[in-house]
Length: 281
Image 1 (tube, rainbow, N blue to C red):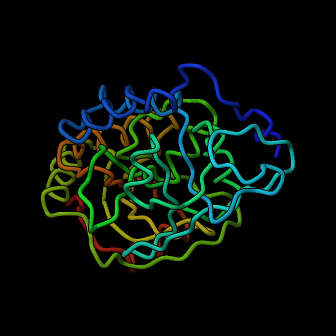
Image 2: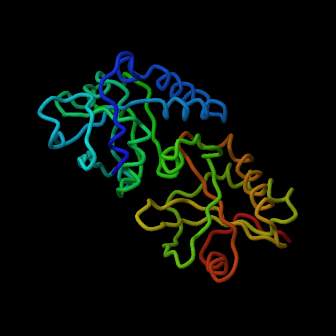
């Protein structure tokens, strides 16, 4: 894992020394006013951050002292694994030592640049990152949040995600997926916004929602788009962005919907088992 070689040793005025104040402010702003500008600021702050990672035990070769270390290539990092109430595999990270100790006063930890953490996590089956979780018997002392796998895939490239409340998904050839219906479907407000926007787009013939799991990733709610005519890649992108923009105000923090254009046998399968949202007369 070559990225481990880029871990930083302790430096004066590193983000971890100062408690990642820019990241904390950005998380607070998104919590109080979730919009595209605030999310962009949050992602930028996250990419510039160094985080504290609790570990069951310190990796061999680091000695017995917790803190920010420089790891050598090939050192394996054991991570804390938690299965949340939605059966999603997550790992906790923290902006500063006080936030970590508010969660667990005794756990060992290492410091890791956020971008290297995301690259590392993409090689595991962990699906989400929880920032600043806290023990329920203690009060929350820092803003927190959740970074989803789809966001990590973009952040790991050093790129600020865009339109992450919604994104277009395209299956690879021969990719195996599991399809079903979500136990908690999109809200009626979101469904109505999708219907209204679909009526304004002549190329959209029908919309469905369904649940899809790909490989080791957590199941995600999908919006299937059936077209009444052929559309270029750029036209499809414009359609998915228009639908995504329409639902943005109704999305809860950390709520995501993915769009997929339906065609061929897969599209016919979704038409049979998916739940219809819109059908043009």
